Length: 71
Image 1 (spheres, rainbow, N blue to C red):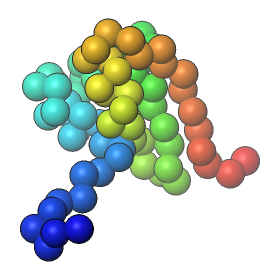
Image 2: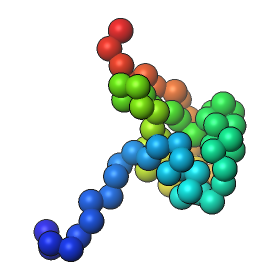
Image 3: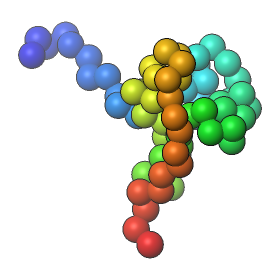
Image 4: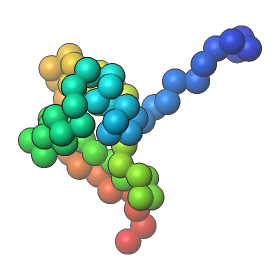
């Protein structure tokens, strides 16, 4: 690995997802609510996987909500 390589996050926050799609946060929440983007919880943090964003952009994302917190 080169020293100047950046590590790309595998999951993005709601705000970062909105920025990457050039839409508002409320639009991201609407996509989640409609089942077009799956939301994952990591502790108290809500994130969307980069692969799901890419699949959504390609038109092939089948969203399922996941909760990774311990019961």
